[in-house]
Amino acid sequence: MHFRLVDDIKEVVFGIELFNSLNQLLFGFHTKIREKVVRMDAGKNYIDFKIKENPFLKGRYYVNLGIADKDCTKQYYYWSKAGEFTIINRGYEKNYLGDVNVKLEINE
Image (cartoon, rainbow, N blue to C red; front, side, top):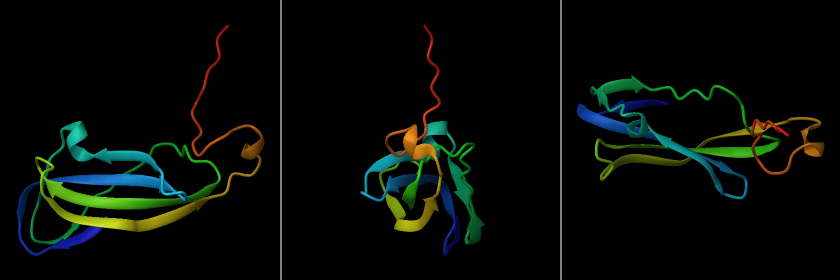
C-alpha cells in the first residue's frame, strides 16, 4: 500500500479485508492483532501485507484497505475495493467447494 500523509501520525494501525465476488468477507486483519502499531511521518509512505500461501480458489476477489488510530476508534482512511485480483486454478473445481483451499489432513 502506497500512500501520502500530510501530517505525522504518531501511531497507526493498518487493516486489510479480502472479499469474494458475492461481497462476503473471507479474511480480515489489522496490525494491532499482532501488536504492531506503526509510526508514520508526513510524505510518502509504504506498508506491505504478504500472504505466504495462496489459499484462494478460482474466482474474483476484492481488497479493502484502512488506516486507523492506535485504538482503532478513529478511522483516517478506508478504501473500499482498493484492488482486485482473479485466480484461475484449473482442475480444482472437481476437488473443492467454496472459495478457499484449506490444507486438510485426514487421520483414521
